[in-house]
Length: 541
Image 1 (cartoon, rainbow, N blue to C red):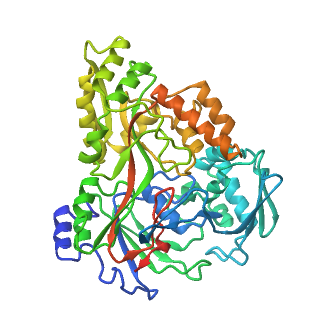
Image 2 (cartoon, rainbow, N blue to C red):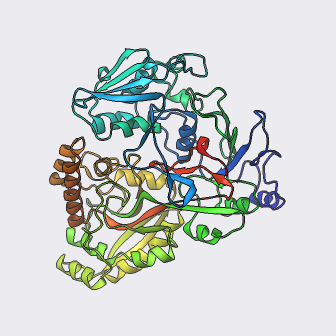
Image 3 (tube, rainbow, N blue to C red):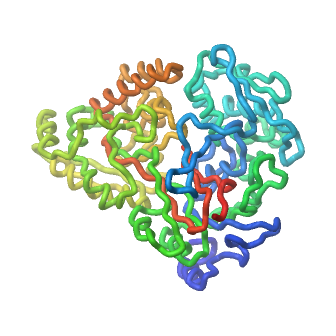
């Protein structure tokens, strides 16, 4: 359902070229601000406007456009594709922080805050507001409370220092390779301290409940409408300190069904489909060459893997896990499920992540080798019943599960595929309730130790879905997560990959491509490390 409309009436309107869209909400049309509108569709929603606590893709997309961060990731043009850009490791751009320098042997970062900026309330944006942002992240429940201590070694609010109105400093116990990335995360977005305090309560001192449906930040756009299941509307911030966005209005239509999104694209009722998993590889392939549309695709850091619960038999046996890796039919999944929109996983670390080494994996499709390993484990003579969980609605995982089921049954398993809603899947995944599952993970910070910590460190219980624990790997991560010497860091990354491959910690499947379908005239589309769109970079070519 889309609002109160049935899908049938929705499609009827789409066929007439007016599906749910007010006249004038198209590229090139004028709105109240006298500029063009970008109309897009997604299959998600906003669960919260609190950058520290959201969970949905829709929330991240909107927050990346309505909230500024201290720094931001840079994006460079893709060779041969002048209308497309991509982030590169260690490339940053200014944000609320106009410039930055290091002191104290790189243990202190000093950020110069832009002068003269104001929140929508008229209150000043200054170093005190930035400190409040960081204090809130460290002390409130949410992502930054985990990221600050683990990734950059900040455990106390007094490590965030206000030197004067326009100078903010972060004092670390040791240099951190991830510090600038942390300052670029949209989870660490700037909020108006006084506005937050107005809505704080004794039970909710950081106003997280109020922020579920309200905003209190500064960014290139402001949210002017949020009707769950129907649409979100953003308008360009007048007098914004940065470059004025080309598109003065962004209309985001909630379109739960992928077939409807395709119809809207073909009817030119929308200009782009946004968000991860918004278009299946099969449909991407079918839209290649469609007149007036452009399919853009770039290698991504998103990892798709078979998660084996190491706390449940027989997956506690390394030979069983190795056997499963030799049985993975990735040679069939790439062309038949991904249609080329992905590449084979050769390491638990993504191919676009510094330190990745695809030459280390011993695994290739070899059923005879897999059967031999199962026999060495004392298994395979009798079918082993096992449940393989997948999310309903994510076509590549549902389709890949069928291929995996077939191959695992060749080596001694009897596999039943369990299709679960996203909410059920997440709950069971986090609590260790699955035996086998197809998981996806993308590290918001494209750093090997960020990725290694959250997926494989024994302390990362909520995100280490397989329950993997190896003291040798923990030691490598702990000693190198903030290592300043690049050569030592990369050597440690190689050692970590060898351990994980020997232990067969994941069933290696594929890395996704980042792919979007847009109107052919749309330029300025960029892929950042978090993979979410920034509308203020887009324009007509």
